[in-house]
Amino acid sequence: MSVETFKKLIQEKGNYDIIKILREGPIKTQTIVKYLERISKIKEKDTLKQLKELENHNIITSFQLKDNSRYYLLIKDFFIIRVPPKELLKHIQKNKELSKSLKEKYLSGIKRYFSQYLSSSKKLKSDVELNLIELIINPSINELIDFLNKKPIKLKSVRKKFPYFDDISDLLKKNDIIEIFSEGGISWALLNSQFTFDVFFPEYLIKNITERLRDKKIEKSLALKSLYNLKNAYLRLEKPEDFEELTQRINNKLEIIKTEEKKGDLNVEKVKELIKLYKAIGDYDNTKLWKAKVLDWLNRRQ
Image (cartoon, rainbow, N blue to C red; front, top):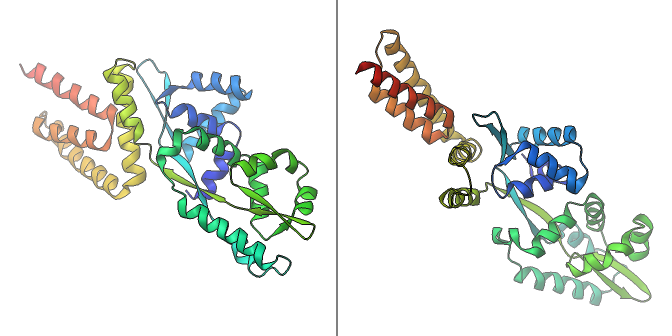
């Protein structure tokens, strides 16, 4: 999935709220439904559609427990990274309306800012970063940023195209997104930062869930199934070749075991190898199924 596709999905109302709540760990469908209804006034049927869409794009995954309750789990997260406004920088040098001194002032400011700027996933939970995400995923602000990146724009032209500009300009300046320059009675709104999304696998959930399990703040069956699903998602999305290889080995092992089963026998050693493969691929249900099968077969042999 491209960064642009991810960005469009996150900009849909409610989708970022789903990601935020799932950063804590696995959550029941109805809990998500009630949460979105409370904070965003989104109806249940619309929330269910959004969950399905996010799952289809491998941003979240779902699973059921024995009581048939469905849980959702985050398998793709993101943080935003500031980047220099490349298109604007290309055009600003060619612009004949801006003075040399204004160009130099703007360009030196950009150079100084980005020489000190660090991007890190540690920013994910900082208040500054979270507030900035809320800004960037706003379609109106995103449209404005795209517009300002095309070429140097006079302030009066920005106000004409975006009547709401004055309402948000202070916020944009405070967050180092734009800067207003004036010379010769003309003001210019110049873009300081563009933004891209860094999409990553949320490994932090493994630690979160493990700690909650240790502190008995999550049921063991829910924690284990979540950890298995995270492993499965990581292999599928981040290591597809490893996933394919493990899947093939499972299929080969199954074929041998089923052939022997038809003869009325169960090769326990082969089944143990199969269970290890299911664990490696993050298949919780089949791991449990084959463990139970071995125990049942051993009990009948006694």
